[in-house]
Image (tube, rainbow, N blue to C red):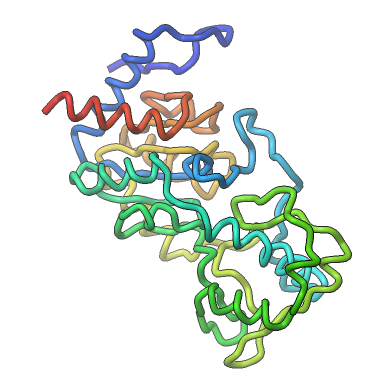
Amino acid sequence: MTQVESRLPGGGTETAAEARARLEVLADLVADGGVLVLSGAGLSTESGIPDYRGETGRRRRAEPMTYQVFTGSAAARRRYWARSHLGWRHIAAARPNEGHRAVAELARRGLVTGIITQNVDGLQQAAGADGVIELHGALDRVVCLACGDRTPRARLDERLRAANPGWDARAAAPGAVNPDGDAVLGDAEVAAFRVVDCERCGGVLKPDVIFFGENVPPARVRDCFARTEAAGALLVLGSSLTVLSGYRFVRHAAARGVPVAIVNQGATRGDEHALVRLDAPLGATLRALLAELDARL
């Protein structure tokens, strides 16, 4: 089977026949089953949560706060929690889109046998998918860095509202909300914000997500590598694969002869490893994939 490219030489628009050919190659891979999905922020953009880089691959903003900065500075934690407290409402209100539902349907049919998500929004699970590996954790949980206690984000939201009466009304609406729930907020609003600590031991609270500068737990990484080796195909959805955290699984699959398919708007770091790559919106493409599979029944 020959590699199918998503763009014509020189960046021209492909024909309908070429687009159809790529979709058929993707359907061939998925129809064989045993598909492992690796999803990124691009899968959630149609739910109103922006990705970090967009189609150009350039980061939309400065690097997110690192683990070292968060743990080393009370002022940094105040800034993070003020912005995240505001942005969390946007994340919590988001709902699964057509792409999430299509992945859940493929899993229900037994074609997708594993899902690794780099997203922290919980939308894939909300769409009905079970056993999702949250590579980078989830924003709906909070962990204490001292005692390790994990609590629901909803509980922290209640406590922050109680500790900051009237702050919500004074804080300006966020100018932008990022995939990690970080909202743009003015310095005055940040300075007026009060952070709360762990109810159990008084320790520092952190969202149960992997920050930049922090490592994914080794056991979780080993599990993902094992699932990659056992997969019939690796399907990347909505990730530029710019960071090694997800890209390493693409390299691992390619090195072991596991076919790689990529659906993403814009180029990705893993394109050279892909048997087929579709540069197209996720929701419409996955809907078309389901229709193609239905037509083969």
